Image 1 (cartoon, rainbow, N blue to C red):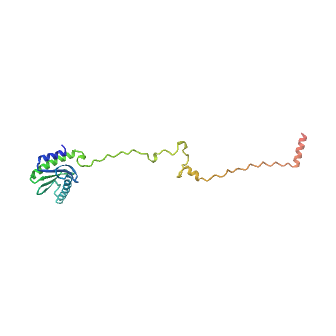
Image 2: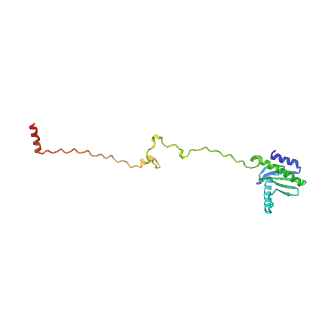
Image 3: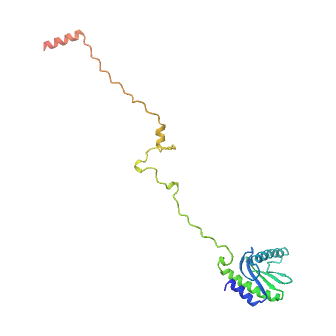
Length: 207
């Protein structure tokens, strides 16, 4: 059995029933069996009426609210709490037996509460959470490949200038011409005195 089936069965048991609306406490329609009555407007007004009635019950410390009855010249408007998050509102004609309306409505509410506990959120007016998309992992700054091949990787202290090694080479001062050391001057020849030269001649003559 579904919520709509239960509301249809309630109408079949109560010929005086003109409309039945199951709504959330925020005034959103969950299901309805209304003919000639706007269900959205009825749900919003019933939710506001039930919230005000709860304030009345709290003001006089009478506990949890069960139902509200509005008696008019043309019939009755009755609202019943269907758990903490829903309410059932009935519109009946003036020739309806109010005691029987309460009896049938209370039985219907108990069955609706069990149905709301079993049905998925989409059938009870609750928002179904959307699936969270999975974002594939992306490479971060530390996962980027090096800017140069391994065989060209610089050694020693890394260049931390904004422009890299080219910037360092551009800012370097131009090297001047290589300094050439002068060639060593030949050692001066030892001067021979006349006496030394004469002795050399005599020595050769003696040999």
